[in-house]
Structure formats: structure tokens, C-alpha cells
View: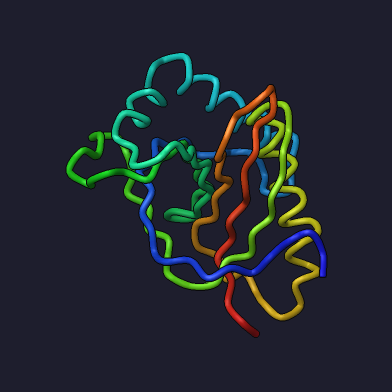
Length: 161
């Protein structure tokens, strides 16, 4: 077995502020540039801090989801309550079930996202012969920053074949 685990997770909800990714889905450099620009913007303009203020924990979610045939990317948190959802945010539901989980550490959140996405979709999913990714939202979860290192996990909902 490769560098991944299969874990059962309860359903959970993420409140996210999003952007449409316009690069072709095979243009990884373009997609990564769009995501990086988006994260810079939400960090600089205070929107990420607003999200953190309603969070139930310290996890920061980078969510990818197809919505109305558009490739969307969100900065999000698990909220304490849906009552605090900002007007321009999306409520993203993750189903109860099995998730392919890839863990990693990098120097920055950007690097972590690129590394985990590549490892999950380029290596772990093709190796995981017993499961299929059937779409739905997936998330890179930034879990901790300590001593100049950002650690986190990629969570991809899967079903048994």
C-alpha cells in the first residue's frame, strides 16, 4: 500500500468563500497559479480572518468542487454554527463515508496544497485499486503550523468497487 490511508469520516460541513478556476483541468501550473492568487487575495483582504472567526477548530480547508459545470475552489472552515455563514459564502456538505487520506508537510500552505494534490490524484488514487473517486468535493486540510512547517491532509471521498 502506498502513502495513503482509507478512513471512515462522519459527515461534515465547510463554509467556503470561492473562486471559479478557468484554466483547463489538465493545466496544473495554471490551476496552481489561480489558487495561489486567490489565497493571497483572501488573506490580504481580511476574508480569511472573517472565516476563522466563525470556525469550530483551527483547520483551514482548501476545497475543490464542480458546481454547475464550473471548477470551483474555496477557502473554508468548519463553522461552529451555520447561522454565522457570510452572505457571499457557500455551504459545502461532505458525506459520511470512506475517504482516501494523504498526509504531508511543507514549508508553506501553497506548497502543501500542490504536494498533497499531486500525491493524492497522481499516485494514491491510481494505486488504491479497491476504491473509486466518484466526484463530489475534496479538500486539502491545513491542520497545523509549527516551527516553519505546515502539516495537513488531503481528503477525497471514495466508494468501494
